[in-house]
Image (tube, rainbow, N blue to C red; front, top):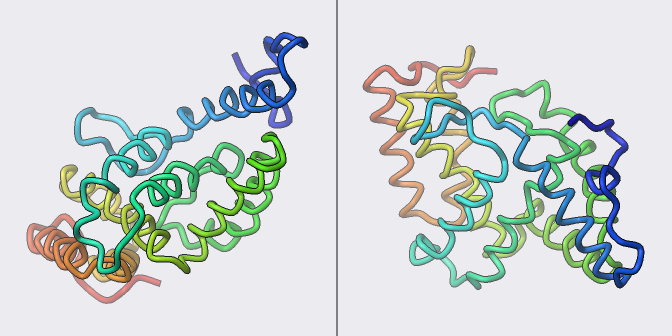
Length: 218
């Protein structure tokens, strides 16, 4: 079944009118969130010969937060950080995924994603709409230890997948090992230990020919 860009999934089989209005809005949002499973990312899976989708990516980040929190340079609230990683990619339901090494797509990313956040979180009851938008804004601003760690997980997870793929998106035309280091350096804003490990993977990938040597691609 296909849907136009303006349609909600719930429109295909409307919820009973007798439902409590708040619960109906929450159910509508949850049904719409199922679209996240259809948004493909560039990163290859380690366990199968296909690309991962956004829902799989979000789940992996939610697992990484409690597992790797001990490496955070600043104390973090694990529960709050988990909320950040679960919420931050939801807007790609409408904005689509913007590949890390696609500089052209990156020029419109902020505008597209802000509009998508308005549209998606607007489906929720007012208090939750404000809460989820606040979480998304916090992640984007990286102004808290939790947001910085959440962003680090977002950059570390595909690094691990690309390592398992013997390069993966590191082999994108125009991308060099130095490009990868530059785009992944944000990991170091939250964890010196994890960034040191990340650099070791990139360096070894370059040594093995999985990422091109040379200056940063422009």
